[in-house]
Length: 190
Image 1: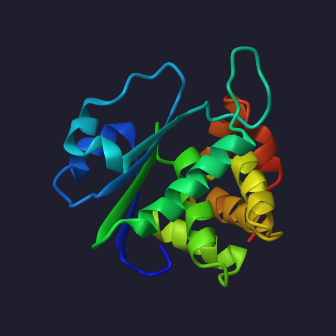
Image 2: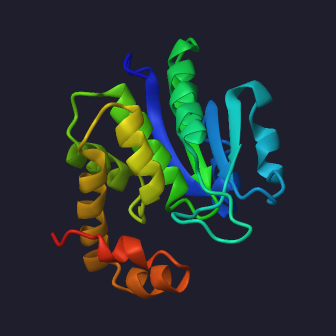
């Protein structure tokens, strides 16, 4: 991606996929729950330019839950490197169920990989500009920090959390209700 041939970066949820089928999307990274069927909107994009990963949006083990693993983070980073090898202009779309957590974590790690000179705060500011409703999956970001040999993405994500709790106060209650209260507690106030 560092050759800047990716002209657009988009993050969205499943329900928004049909809105992007005519926007020139060339590459799609999908992160779905293990039992979610492939969305019908996938037919808009060639299979060889799509990559699908399956795990739950979880940060701690739970019965029946499939956590993101280091191999998933490696697959996301490999996909990002592969995009740069395709000729021509590109528009990368990364999505998960809501376009909020797994997809924004993936977008953050792809930006960090592409532009290693950016600070973690600059990476997550870009993610925020792409998707205002960002709440990156903390487990994925922690693994990305390690995979990329960095030590600043996780704390930058925590600062984004603090900012988001100011922007969207209802996030705290919603996240606690789905078992992600640890992320609320780790937020660094702006």
